[in-house]
Image 1: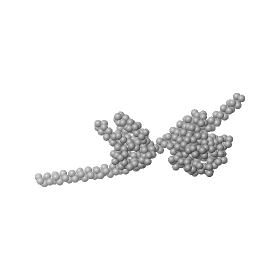
Image 2: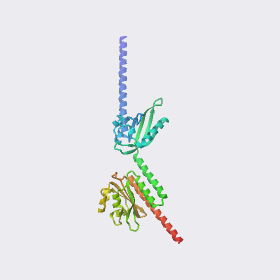
Image 3: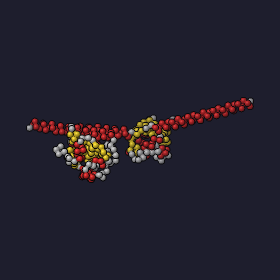
Image 4: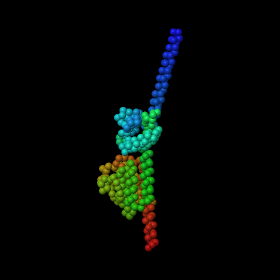
Length: 329
């Protein structure tokens, strides 16, 4: 009997050791798998969050690529910073309201777009896909969020809307002054441009005069509102090609020295043509950006083309009116 009991005890201990070993192996495998999963998450262009369903959404977990917004994982997991703290103040109420509505309507997941603030204060657009995890009683335990930076996509969408709206406006406008206002307003809606003006070329003299402007200093308006036909500035425009330079590099004469201390950086000079003739020029600049991106260059050159088409239409209409008057006389 004692031998049987002894053998049984040994077998029991052996099974316990085997189970313990298997559990340890399973735990190690699970940990390795978790590490691999986190490694994959940190490599994809999204930021993953696990939030508690509390005010401002404290984070239990955040992937390391939160650093692309300037923050660290520890800032969130230590609760020094809540996710709601980085949501743009103008969007926060809407984001909260949308989440509560989806929870009340028993959604499992949903998406929304809004703005967040990076640590440096820059505004970024994000698309967030939220997964709502509830227990058997319907109480929300966690919110799982996948946050994707869509700033570039939103910027391109905005540029398309600007072009579309301006095209509609120009097709119905018959007033040059009204059109100039719409043109400049459209250009200043572009994030990378916050200063600008439109010069018109006198058909008879060839002089170039600033017809409308916004954001320029009184010093700029005083010294750069008129250029003669033979000035280097007008000749640069009459070449008919867009010019993208720093403002400081566009000071062509000693007269322009008065503009040397203007707070302008990236600058664009975009000639406007009616047929083959240069009839106007956009002078657009930023006091923040050092370079105007290619996508923005395409848009402002398209706007200039739209203006050229508008001027051609207006001139054609004027000629038709003159012809009718001559026939009547």
